[in-house]
Amino acid sequence: MKQPSSAFTVWRARWETIANNRKALPILLVLGLLLSFAIPQFNLVNPYIQLIIMYVGINIILTTSLNLINGYMGEFSVGHAGFMAVGAYASAVLTTQVLPSELNPWLFPLVVLAGGIAAGLVGLVVAIPSFRTRGDYLAIVTLAFNMIVKSIIENIEAIGGPRGIPGVEKLTTLPWTFFWTVLAVWVIRNFIYSNHGRGVISIREDEIASDLMSVNTRQAKLLAFTISSFFAGIAGALFAHLLQFISPRVFDIIKSTDILIMVYLGGIGSITGSVLGATIYTVLLEVLRPLGMWRMVLMPLVLVLLMLFRPRGIMGLREFRWLIPLQDLLGSKRWRQKKEASDATPAN
Amino acid sequence: MPLLQIDHVTHYFGGLCAVSDFNLALESGELVGIIGPNGAGKTTIFNLITGVYRASKGSINLSGTELVGKSPSHITTLGIARTFQNIRLFKDLTVLDNVRIAHYSQASYTPWESLLHVGRYQAEEKRIIEHSMELLSVFKLDHLSDELAKNLPYGSQRRLEIARALATHPQLLLLDEPAAGMNPNEIMQLMEFIRWIREDFNLTILLIEHQMRLVMGICERLKVLDFGKTIAEGLPWEIQNNPLVLEAYLGEEGGEL
Image (tube, rainbow over all chains, first blue to last red; front, top):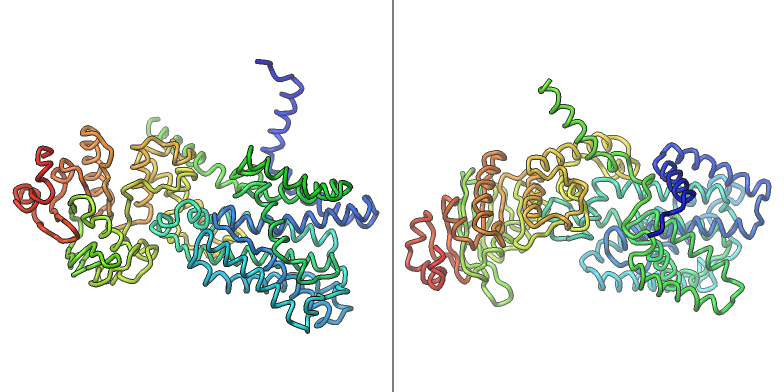
């Protein structure tokens, strides 16, 4: 067999040093934040690319939050765009009809939060009856939910009916997108690496065993579903104030499918995968835009190939080390070291 | 007062009577076995005790608390843990995670602390890891803590299942065919092992078994089921010589004794 070249070994070693050095993470975050202010300020890249970066952020939020249900909990929810719609409409109604427009830029974080809370509450209401069903049946319930949300919005004239809400102020900026994306990823990661998150994962593995190991599966499911829909609402609010126009058609089943594709492309049960999946899919769609119609042939083809050769997606069930809390990463090792130390003491 | 009191429990699956008028009083510290041919309703009784099924009639009482109608997770929290006939570990998770999950109801922090990793999160997680690792080391599995459960050899998986059950801090442990698939030598070791965990963890044990060697070797009392009905109960030697039992269960396989 051919030996890997020395340059490769050097780069690999360098990469491992970087991958194991967690101190880089806060530095990268600060840099990212600074960059998110600098880019629009000094027009470092053209506005079109800025727009795509913001879409990437919104899609990361959507993908990570859906992965909580489809990847970590192992259920199959196909109505994520429905929750996104709730967040988008709740926030857009606030900025266009309720709040005085001169206050909008100042209240924007609260508006986004309100969108998230609205979607979270709806998620809770949907979750209670849906969790009597499992698997395929839950998929149908969420599908129906997506359709119901769309028809309800279409039939309320006060929020524009089928015409939607035009003239939403453009309040979503690069720094805000960065902030909410990081927050969403961080909070969902925290949840997964916690007692409640382990409960959610155990439901995926074996729900009956999980129940019999004292996991309150009902609580775990409600938590996962509420958190997931909360962040879908946040993404919806950001989306509405970026697109500046929302209509029920935007949040149909096609949108839900897009999010599903990003989840399975990046890999189920992985936050790193969600970030990668959302980024690659969003960027690829834009890069392939010149191909016109063929784009919609090529993308699904990529997916088919991916499912054939890598059915768990790019990162399926694996995680970048930086994202795993130290305690989970080293807990068992630390315990063993401590035990060896205490075993050695009496011998002396 | 007995630790577990089962009175007149009857359970139907549709029109089929799976368990009929089952009674059992388990004193604290006892080791009792339930035997019977396939389909006699043994596992159904475990499922009724642990709340997987809700008894059609009768009452199940754990030191004064009625269990019928409570959810499985609640019943586990009250102090009943179990293993499964066909191992049901969380196969794609690590050995450590399997045991950590069983601490779910004991972790005393709220979902908010989970989301933000603040408050009691750090201290509680540290405690859970330490307790899990100690439990694993008692079962000689600590060096495998980062291994996926499915990669463990069969015997270790059985031990891990018991370790996981004990992580819920039970008073009563239900073992569903712990000797399934074991050879006589392994069964001898298992008997030692069961005696030892009972002493070490102050347990009351109820077990279901096919292997007469194990049942006769360690159980203090036996109940024999056939078609959902209790056909005999008593000390192992009494059961061994009970003509009804011989006919129903041991008749064709009497040689196994």
